[in-house]
Length: 297
Image (cartoon, rainbow, N blue to C red):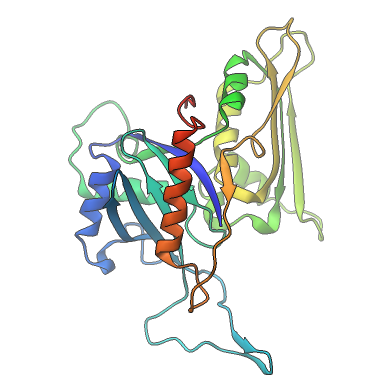
């Protein structure tokens, strides 16, 4: 099981733990806020200093089959109203805002969880009017956490010179594309048959100090983060001043993350408590070893 570090930044009137409690009070059938095929909160609870939650979504593609050593593959019979579902666990530390989030390729990912929490926060309402659009006054920002050294190098960049990334097209889900506009227009464009990866490079115009426009770079980096492991490589190059040497930060290799080996249960699924234990131990380790404490958004 892959686990990545994120940090929650509150935009709305409710802290994350308060919002989770309010959703928990609803019936399961009332916990989808963007349609019946959307993510829903399965369960949330506090244990010690951390909050734990499982988010689930129905599997949008075909389901698996059952097979045995001497038996051909066959359908798995589901009862009326049942579908295959995928679940994603998180462990969250209210004191710091940091979270360890399970990576689930077919299930909810961090960008989808962020949209779900925003919709839930909007559902409960209660924010006074101000100059921001309504949607921006609710929910949370959910930032990818890089290793402290990577952040310190990016913060030094006064000049962005190149952004290059490679994306595995079969790994990109439609729900991920909906999170971004710039990348989705590129990835939806007709491509020659047989293409399974696409590499894009953006380079500043020639000139000693010519930079890439910083807000555009930030938007691309945010959209890349929503694609998870579909991003094979993403490198940003820049420097502090025109006279300095160029530096590079790899946004895939420099993420704070870990892979944990877990044993599946009798139902051939990863048991919830095993996942939560791994998330708790990982988050505790990151916090105790200062892998997160010096990170800035």
